[in-house]
Image 1 (cartoon, rainbow, N blue to C red):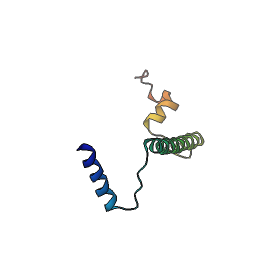
Image 2 (tube, rainbow, N blue to C red):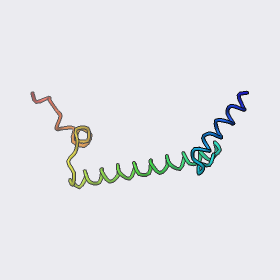
Image 3 (cartoon, helix red, strand yellow):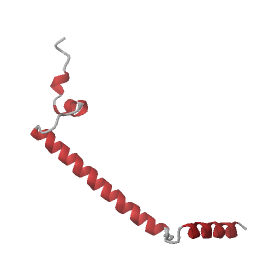
Length: 79
C-alpha cells in the first residue's frame, strides 16, 4: 500500500501544477553542482574585487582586514 499512496500523492502534486516535470537524482545533482560552481565563482570574483579595492585604497577596511593587512596598528607593546 505504500507504493499506491506514494503514487496518489504524486498525482495530487502533479494536478496542482501541471507544468512541473519530475527530475531524476542525477539531473538534480548535475544542477546542484552547476549552481554551486556558479556561486563559488561569484564569491571568488567578489573577494578578488574587494582585495583589489583594498589594495588601491578605494574602500575602507573592516577590522579583520585591517588586522590581516596592517597588524602593527594593533600592537599594544608600547603601553
